[in-house]
Image (cartoon, rainbow, N blue to C red; front, side, top):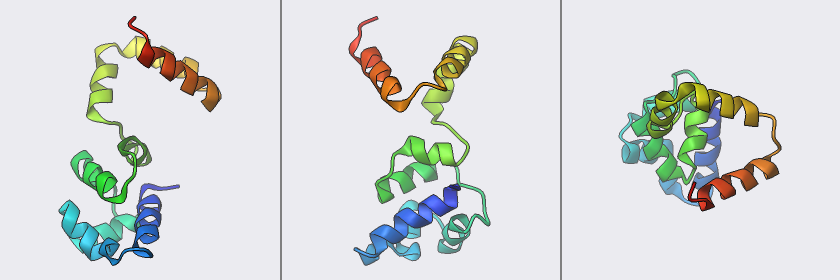
Length: 116
C-alpha cells in the first residue's frame, strides 16, 4: 500500500464517524493546503516532510513509524542511531529480517527489559 492510499483510508474511516476529518479540516490542523493533502492522498504528490507526517500521525491516530515507513523514510532518531554504528545495525536488521513477528516481538521485549 502506498503512503497516500493509507492516509486516505485512515482519514475516510474517521470521517464516516466524525466530519472533522474532511480533507479541508485535517489539512488545516496539520498545516497543509487542502489541495496538497488531496494530491498526497491520490499519490499525485510525494509524502510531506517528517514534521508534517508526525502531525498527520497524531491527527489520524496512526503510529509515526508506520507512516514514515510507507513514505520510504525513518524517524530522525532512528536514523541517527543507525548512523552512529551503521555496520552493526545493518547486520542486525538483515539478521532479523526473516524472523516471524512473534519472535521479533519477544526479542524487542527482552531488549527493553534488560539492563545490558
